[in-house]
Image (cartoon, rainbow, N blue to C red; front, side):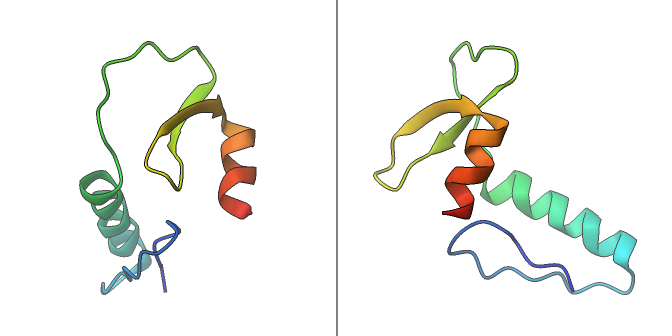
Length: 69
């Protein structure tokens, strides 16, 4: 079973196969958890929305640690 890994999101894939479930997950993430922003982000960095609703630029590793905490 594939579940959304975003904090506070209860989305779960309902699909006849794992491949279809991953496609559903991809679509869900793009529709619900991705925003386009007009900012230059340095190579190798990502933008993460903090608990107070602000955006913070950090490395992918820092973002993983941020969401693991």
